[in-house]
Image (cartoon, rainbow, N blue to C red):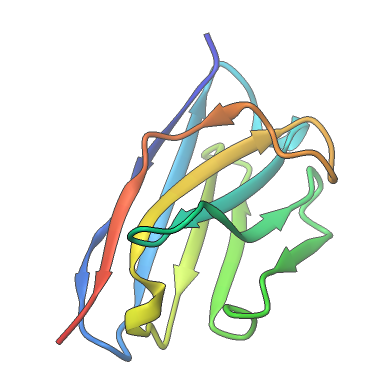
Length: 119
């Protein structure tokens, strides 16, 4: 059964950094478009970043462009989201997602990681 296991959520102060990790079981990241989404408190789930199977194409939400970096580790079959210059409005539950193409959001989700940005 295909699943995604996440790690790395925490409470950090504004301006801080955090890295989230996502490791699939049952499939290789090189065969899926891998994405990160987040759900702020009381709001809908929203797109954060995605990366193509090859790693050559990436896309970010305007609100995180220049602060967040999505990256693959094909050796360890993992995806990371490096988050720098964190702001209070980055607070939310972050989810890893695997999809079969670039356009359609996939059906495979991680369990979620709580990221709280507060002083």
